[in-house]
Length: 217
Image 1: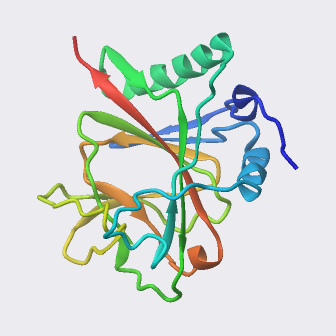
Image 2: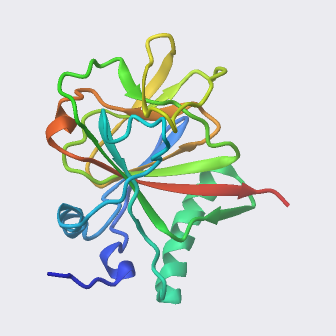
């Protein structure tokens, strides 16, 4: 049965617990209605993403990208939400202007194969001139986000999301936690990191990826 929602109400921000680190910021209790958000994903279809003719998607794993476009937003609620996020990113970057996506986009992932070795991780990549706001939604949270030493890397993510990372150096891993948002520099090589891949054979890894473009005038 369809369940009607108002996007601003479902994704209302919570009472933040902010921790500032040298190279990233973490915000716990990011959403007020976390349990309702998890329940929404438990009962919704999610659309396949990056389905080229060469992809390993739907063969080795499920990689999906649902989104809430929020066609008729409450402008006051939306702008208040964006202002709150914008102010925190400004403190982190010092950029005079930040363009934040208004669409709420999510990555939903699951392994199709068991016992995938730990060195097979999500393809590291760059988001140039951007700040990433990544929110961990699922309650399992094995691993987090790996920040690597910057290096030359050919991005083949469209063909295979998973790659052997043994020749790349990890600077640090931001620990995933349910309802935690992490803010970090997209110019740093980064990628999803799963400590135990079998956790996401039986369960779905759900994250919200918000891209914030820096504007220097």
